[in-house]
Length: 313
Image 1 (cartoon, one colour):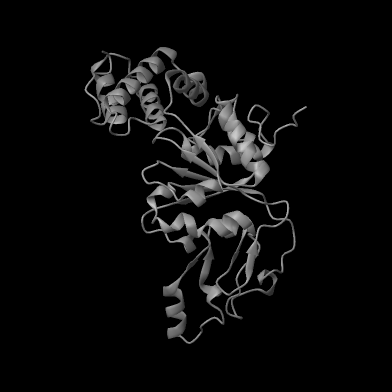
Image 2 (cartoon, one colour):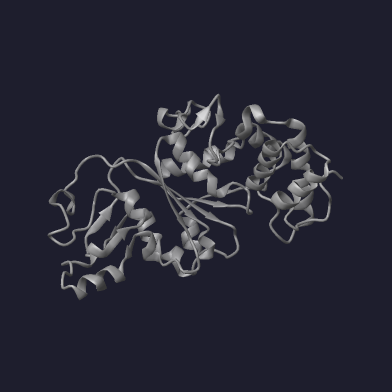
């Protein structure tokens, strides 16, 4: 008989996360996730069981970036996020060196004894061992936070590495060892490793704009998301808007979104966030479907020059 899964979004939220909800609906613009695809739930649990990164592919607007923080919410974990750009270096996920601060200290002749004193923790360092801090100048660094002094349990976490395909091609391969062994060498040669029982769930997203190295992909659990369909969009709207949910309005906006997406096959269509923005604007402004103002709201919040169909066609 199968064991209970560690991640089960159909169970009540932890007390720390339940405060974000009221009457079962999101009370903030927090990107609450609708887990209506069993593949997503299974993939998260496989990643947790194997301690492998979860690599999520999908078009823009399919919910890749909001998956990790919502999994963290249901697991009662903290979420660390790094959005990748073309300028992201592999070390940025481990630590960041503050050259300007070191230069300033050199000018006043108060240089710290180690390079690590000028390094801020990256998302993987925070997730592996947040209490393992770097030593600084003797007059600034309390002894209680020197290397390895804190032996308490580390909080469990989820790490989101967003849009890895935007990075230099060498970045994924540079992460093979840290993600495979859950350890890396710090700026002063010290070993930073995930504390037993606090191994993080690492979620990596890609728009599939660039092929990732095969060795990197082999070390991940793969999940491919599709663009949201009409049924999913309406479920998301119902979950987010609660008592303010207008089914007729939501159906019309969802239908228009899908028409735009079909016409924009070569470019990204409207996202779920844009769909929700349109519904919120219509509700807050008292806009009715089919009016001139409705056309304008849909144009500025949803269409944005994409597609040729008018909202009420």
